[in-house]
Image 1 (cartoon, rainbow, N blue to C red):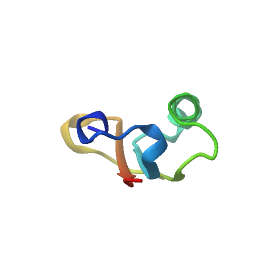
Image 2 (image 1 turned 90 degrees about the horizontal axis):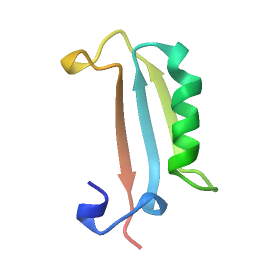
Image 3 (image 1 turned 30 degrees about the vertical axis):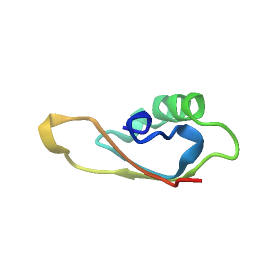
Length: 66
């Protein structure tokens, strides 16, 4: 989605992560660190009971054009 808008990871300013199992936090954090560079975008991680389509993870990004 970012590429389609002519943006990249450096344009992301806020990430919201919803996990159905907080035991997945460490693995998600490793992927997050690999996808973004310092200074990392602000992030909120929330444990939820369920997500649509029986997903274990949902991510929302807010990106800003330069």
